[in-house]
Amino acid sequence: MRVLIVEDDRLVRKGFISLMPWEQFGMQVIGEAGNGEDALAFLSNREVDLLITDLSMPRMSGIELIRTVRQLYPRVWTVILTFHQDFEYIQEALRLGAIDYIAKTELQQDKMEEVLSRIEQRIKYEMKQQARAWAENEKAAPDRAIVWLAACIDGDRQMCSPVYLGKPVEESAPGIWFLPCEEGEWTEECKALLLKDPFLCGGVAMLLDGIGSGGGSQVIRTLQEYRERFMFYEWNPDAPQVWTRSFQQLQETTGRRPVSLEEEQALQEVWSSLQWVIHDRQYEENLATLEAMKLPPRQLGTLFIMASTRWERVVSAETWTAPRQELSWQTWKRWLEGLRQELASYLFKPSYSQEVISCVWKAAQIIHQDLSREITLREVAGEVNLSQSYLSQCFRDIVGVSFNEYVRRARIDWAKKLLRDTDKPIYWIATQTGYPNEKYFSRVFKDKTGMLPSAYRSSK
Image (cartoon, rainbow, N blue to C red; front, top):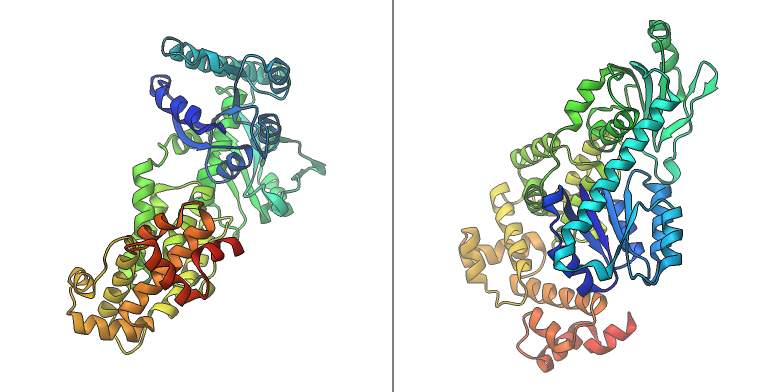
């Protein structure tokens, strides 16, 4: 169970995350946030099963966060982390759908297992209640159903309900429409009717069988997991069709383990390097690995946003199109191919071989790895296996400025970012950007920008 912790007190948050026996109860903390707005930003990019949130926070309270999560992510369980005197707020949160609360006074070593055990049992109870409700609504659990799955349910791409036999179908969960049917309703005419529905321009229609043995909540949850991660790789918006699947097939697909943090970091590393732009084989290998791992689409977008922060140090953001959300693997690959061509037009110089170009841009990335250290042409030339004189010549021709000038610009650009995005003192920023003291750093910074670092910070 993937857990997100939201608490504005950093020490309380870190202590709570590090001390609780999460693994013992099948839980893993995959993220943390200091306020409700940051929590929603995290939820937009990562799949979360359990949200544990404080109530009193700046910018967005826990109550507002729970209300919003209930609307946008109804399958996320929510638990309150609070002081015992917030009883009225606790009642309000429980009315909004929170399943339990943790009083901060409970957070003692001998009670931590008890707290997580209680939450685990509460979630199991809620899941049983959902299954019971399904059974009461459906006197006999349907063995077959027609299912509609939307490719996207965010913002302006919100899907309208599908229509079957002239009637709109009621939405069962966000982006999922589920209509039980008898065997006699499952005909070629049915398929032909489904293919005419405009819904298929932005989603999938599926004839699903073998679901009679599964509880209703289990079926919907399996469909949610499939839609949120795997449908992206199988759906082709250019060729609408009605799929025929068994519930067992969907369970086998969704039963794949999630991508580990180590695997995700390895992916980020290979896509952060611009070598995939230069070498065709590297690009094909990276693409095949990505498709095999089946990252959820939002996680895929986050991966490339993180990678692009590394590209921007070498390639100006004005020369390429930023990563964006696509509805299918097919359209996403087309976007990626276009991005590769944009980046290649900046990186390639026709007078040099592919190998030399690769070495020069690798040298540029080495410069950005740690701008606090001394960076010499001799050291970098050794790392890319070129002579100093040849690297100096190639670097100027391909990048457009000399090696030393590129290093100076990289240091100043990094200093600008630190001045804009942090409140760290000037002497700290000087050391992080490779300058021996604050006075010298300020002189160089003013020479390059026309402003002292303090004045630059105040102007932003």
